[in-house]
Length: 66
Image (tube, rainbow, N blue to C red; front, side, top):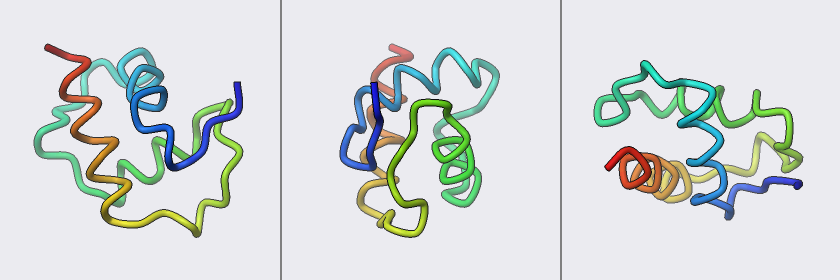
């Protein structure tokens, strides 16, 4: 499944599996950006992310942990 910046929930699910030890609440957006773009299914343009999209991914990731 091809992931894009707008797929916050699906990206979060992948990040739970690939980075289980990350303290998501305090993650830097630069690290989050790198984690997302390194996902094997991520196909979007790495330069097209916004702060709002990264925040949505972070919030979805936190939700997945609960």
